[in-house]
Picture 1 (tube, rainbow, N blue to C red):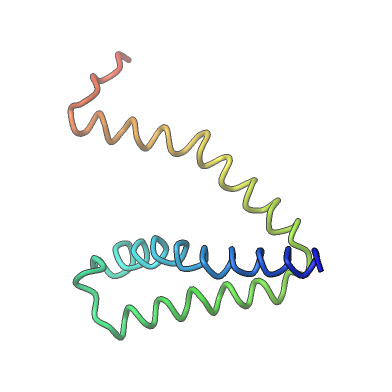
Picture 2: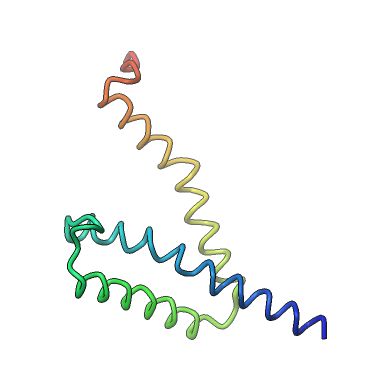
Amino acid sequence: VMMMVAAAAVTLTVVMAFPLCIFPCRFTMGVLVFGIHDNDMPKWLHFTITLLLCGSALLVSMWIPNISTVFSLMGSTTSSFVCFILPAVLTVKLILQNKLPTPPL
């Protein structure tokens, strides 16, 4: 009985969290690929991007048999992004907005 409760809780968590992950992905795809913000996006493009994101998530979940592979790939890419790339991008953005003085060379 406890395993069924745990499985139901995990299922509920995934069902509630998946749309929260799709929204920023769809917004980013719309802005970077099409140059359209979410409010100006046509319904057919909104639906197509959402369908592609959900379909790709489904295919990845079907083809990768072990969740530890996904966790290791995500950890290796996001940790390097957060540690090295993101601080540099934010520093450049602050310098370009004149909110941070240019470092001496």
